[in-house]
Image (cartoon, rainbow, N blue to C red; front, side, top):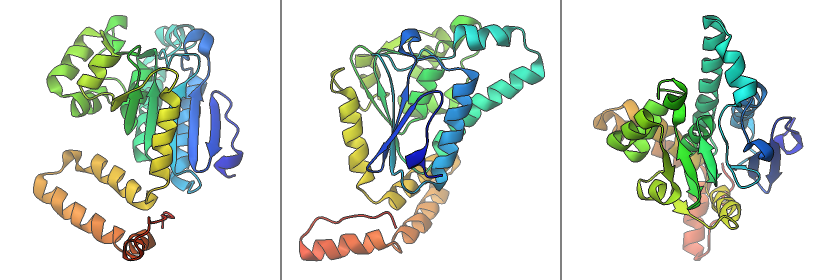
Length: 269
């Protein structure tokens, strides 16, 4: 089934002109996650690898908040009573969501307003670009519920985005970053007004969707793979990746459009 026909059960999903929009949609509770929504998000991001009709994805929350993390009553309560095998199944499932987000070829743009904490902060962190508001409050608050800051890849991802010292402070303290601080530290790519936030994120997504999506997917793959490469290995990997991109029709289209003094129209092949 094409994702154009997909009907999400635990959040909203829309696809318009190549841009998929995920809206976490429990605004009365600030959009917390449940066991079921974790799994459905993981499965959707996995499907995106075989969905050429989706060229970019925007993730946002309904009602002025992004996501309040795992639902206290529907997730935290049951986990307190779970045995070790069940706990490990859960933590691996949540990590699989992040793996699926990083592995899907489409760029992901997070539009973050209001509360963005716990697993919600991880979903924003695992996105490729993050647009926020001055009113956003971003917190990796695992320590405040007696857990380590190393959740869903936080200790790998966050230092790479904002630096080791700043990440250490946030993960040890569990305190919230304001929107302005998050932009200053590089967590947010841009601050927007709350009323313009989703529109700005969708506009960026449409610009990415209009671009050479095969090449965008290669950029995303190399950004991910080169984390554990030395510089010589990274340069060689990029040489191979770029040579592959030079075989695409989009590369030829760009050259021919330049010759005609026109703007290229990319098709993703």
